[in-house]
Every structure is written in structure tokens, then in C-alpha cells.
Amino acid sequence: MLKKWFEVKLWKRIFAALVAGVIVGLIWGEGAASIRWIGDIFVRLIRMLVVPLIFTTLVSGVVAMGDPKRLGSIGLKAFCLYLFTTAAAITIGLAMGAVLQPGANVDLAGAEARDLGPAVTLLERLYAIIPLNPVAALAEGNILAIIVFAILFGVGIVLAGDQAKILGDVFHAAAEAMLKVTFLVMELAPIGVFALIAWVAGTQGAATLLNVFTLAIAVYVGCALHMIIVHGGVIRFLANMPLMPFVRGAADPQLVAYSTSSSAATLPVTMAAAEENLGIRAPVRSSVLPLGATVNMDGTALYVGIVALFAAQAFGVPLSFSDYLIIGLTTTLVSIGTASVPSASLFLLAAVLEAIGVSGAQTAIVVGFILLFDRILDMMRTVINVTGDLAVATTVAKWESELDEDTYRKRPMI
Image 1 (cartoon, rainbow, N blue to C red):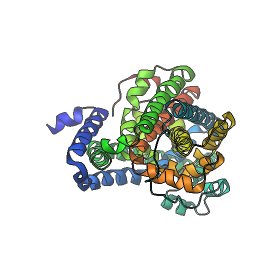
Image 2 (image 1 turned 60 degrees about the vertical axis):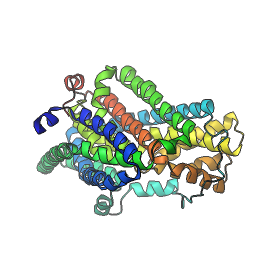
Image 3 (image 1 turned 120 degrees about the vertical axis):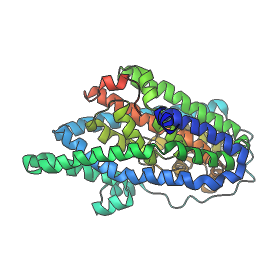
Image 4 (image 1 turned 90 degrees about the vertical axis):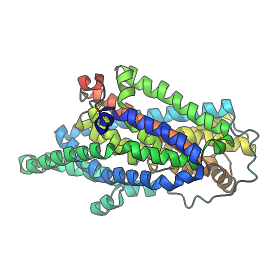
């Protein structure tokens, strides 16, 4: 029996666990919170892998490039694509908000205001990229700082040549070992996903969504359209690759992203799927995916655009065409480098809403209203973040001749 279970492809096991979790959660109700600890343990396991996986694979990937100039080429192409998909996401979000009018006739009188705390300035974000103590950055899980240090360390190994060859080999071996550990942890994914989804469905189920039905529809439909039109278009027309292998290969990280609501927590699964399912080789996989987990926030951009219109409609704030442009530009800029954790996008609302004349007190009321059910919306936003990471990585890999097309076209192994 156990052997047959493991013979079933992982994404099918995770999907079955997700469906079962929804059913159990809706039936069990608040009692489903008693098994949340199982899902939390799974999340802790995969988060445990994030820092060592990023550091070892990124150093290994830079060493594998051989020429530091290639790093600039890969990074520039990836960053431009990430900006493109983010801009497309905010456009779709604004369109969904304008068409569906999720804030019309919404009563916010009973919402409890929530203080978002002090905003982080752009200058502070830039300072945080350069670690004063790389060891402390590793310990704190500061992803952008880890990326910067890992790149510099990898470049140093390349420039040292034969003197550092043994160190490069060590990082190649360490990266492979971390990927194997990731595969082991992923076998627990169905159990973790079941517990997390049961908890969400039991404590924030269908009754909660009825209060914001139109907003939920706008977010879910917008995310689906973004994946189909933008991510699908990137794969089909920019990478010139068939779409269905990508859809199959991205299923595992998408399902884990939906249950954890965290791009960073999903990163080990994303990297494993990129190698085993999509054939993205180390130089691109190890550099583009960690970068995407920190700067590519398609779901955040789309969601903040919808919620900005939701707030404006709820408070009767008239918006001109220039206001729409301001929302788009502000959201694109502030979404870069957003923390890859649940509900992080709510912390961007203050900057965006202030730009269109929504007061701080009104913003606090909107956040208090949305926070009650944000987890359910955040789950879908995280899915398109992760899908965007893989779409960009696949495209850059194709452009850089770092895509194993035989692996890409075959059925996924995990």
C-alpha cells in the first residue's frame, strides 16, 4: 500500500491532500485548528532549507558559469522580465478592480482599524542588501543580502582559478546534497498541505469569503488571467517552448505555494521542480529563482492594485486616469523586495493609498477589514508569484542555452 502511494506522482498526492483538507476543514470547522501544528512543522522543514539551499546553489551556479560577465547577462534579462510581468500584473489588477467594482456598496463601519507600523523606506531597503556581517545575514535569513554575498563569493572563486577549484567542487557537492534533502522533505508535502488547508478552510472558510465575495472573485480571476495570458505568453512566445510541459512541471511548487502562502518557504520546492521537471540548469536556476523570490511579486502587484480601487470605491474617492498611472507606478516600485511571507502585501497599501488621497486612518480601516480573510486571498497571490519565477527562469534558460529541452518535454519526475 505504501509503495503504491509513493508511485503516484507527487503533484497528484499534494492535490488530493489539498482537496481532502478543504473537505475536512469545512466539516470540522474551528476544530481543524488542532492539526495546524502538523502543517507548521512542514513549513519549518522547508524554511530550514531556504538559506543553505540559496547560498550553496547560487555559489555553485556562479562557479558553473565560469565567466562573471554571464552573470550580468542572466541577471539583467531576468530583472527586465520580472519588471514586465509585474507591470502586466498591476494592469490586470486595475482592470479587474475597475470592471468588478469590489468596493462598491461595501460597509466598512464595523471594521477594526489596524496599524501597519512604520514604513520601510527605499533607502533602508537598499542598505539592507549589503550585509555588514554575512554570517548574521545567513542566520537572519536576509535573502537579498545572502544573494549579494553568494554572488560575490562565487565570483571570487572563479577569479581565483585553480587555487580555489577545490572550494568550487565543495559547493557543487553541497548544492547537490541540499537538493536531495529537499526531495526527502517534499515527500512530507501531502501531509503538511492537508493540515494547512484544513486549518484555513475550518477557520476562514466559505462563510468568511461571502463578506467580500466580489473582491475574492476579482483576485482569483485576475490571478488566473495573469497566469494564462502573461506567464503562458512568456513561455510560448518569448521562450518559444510548448506550454503544457511547463504547466505539469510547475504543479508541485504551485500547490505548496497555495498552502504555505510564502514564496520564500516554497523556494526549495521551486528549485527542485526547476531542475527535475523543467530542465533549468544550475547557472540560471541558482541565480534567477532566488532573485525572483525576493523581487518578483506579480501577485502582490495585482492584489494591491485591486485593493487600492476597492478602498477608493468604498470611501468614495474619485480616480482620474493619472491616479491609475500613479497606482501602477507606485505598486510596481514598492512591490520589489517585499517580504516573501504571508500577508506582506498589506504593508504596501499605505504607500499606494496615500498616493491617491486615501488617509492613513482610512488605510488602517481597510487593512482591518481585509486582514480577517487575507490568508485565503494570499494563497492565490503566492501561486502566481511562484509561477512567474519559473516562467522567467525557463525563458532566461532558453535564451542562455541553459535549458535541457529533453527534460523539459518529458513527464515530471517529482
